[in-house]
Image 1 (tube, rainbow, N blue to C red):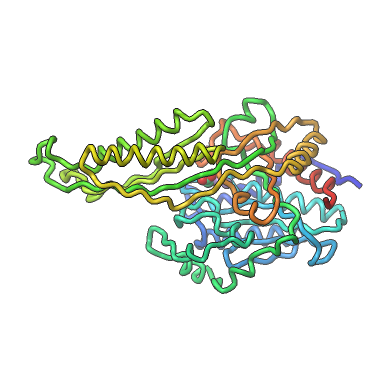
Image 2 (image 1 turned 90 degrees about the horizontal axis):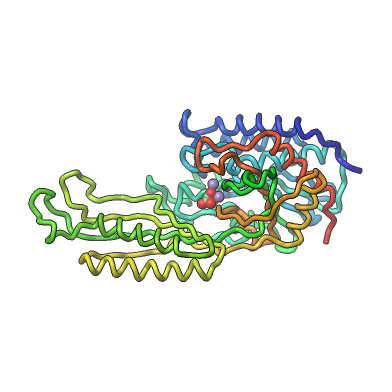
Length: 415
Ligand code: GLV
Ligand code: MN
Ligand code: MN
Ligand code: MN
């Protein structure tokens, strides 16, 4: 039996749901929905309601992941996981994360409505901590599902000094319940995620959908450069130990290192803080972040070493101090070949080609790979723009993606 597909209706429904979810924000004009905030709570409630309406049984774990369960073969049967995240960066687009959750729910809604039966179950997951914008740790909700949550990250603090432990309690959950979030190894067949591409490749190829080959590894560093504060009007240039030009030179060094790489490495200095931060005081201390990503773990590690050497050379030359600490690292995650093939076949059923492409952006699959094989479907994204309110995927493309997930599930037999 094949589920009847109304791609236009699926796309229109996806768009309406994305608008509704996108209206849940800490700030009315700039979509911002951080992990374990009141906005996260409201988004989780909405997603839970949609899941129930789709005919799924809903539960939530200690890290706030909303789960919609479909278990035609009973709750103990192995299961396929389909998900994405509902947290956002600050001043975000509406599609990053939200779209994958919405498409998972819509696909399951059609499957349930068609009365399909399977010897396995499916859980639709809405994670809450993919962006890593509130706490320095990231992927904690998917890590908990995968059974690799690091207890030490409970002590991580947000900008207000609230620890992750306190945030979990304030959200109404208990940290003692975190181990219960973990799926039993062997009980899960695969994790599949649909996500906007967040880059320009599919648009350039004129294809609505693509299949991901691998998710690039990433390192995040915090760099502190120390000099000496002084009067901006009295200390001669040659006698200064100004932390800012040193930090600026280090930012240029990391840019140069990434540009010289031949594996498409990308490096970003996205945050910089100057102390004391006064117009007439020589900066005594600058802290900045580095986000470095590459599809080659070896190149990424070599680049980190090169950056460390460069930063120390620059600091020595300028009589500054420098401390570099790495606070986050994920290795490159190859997507499972069999899932790539199955996703491509599902897209081919709809008359499209589904080019293969790597993901430079991070995804929950980087944590889920500790539990099971990972597969990802990318949806064309206008102008390649993401992490930006201008982010856009068309209803037509989203309808096709929902249809591809339905065909993927229909064809999916237990290995
Ligand atoms: C989050 O979207 C990331 O890829 O850093
Ligand atoms: Mn995302
Ligand atoms: Mn993102
Ligand atoms: Mn991401």
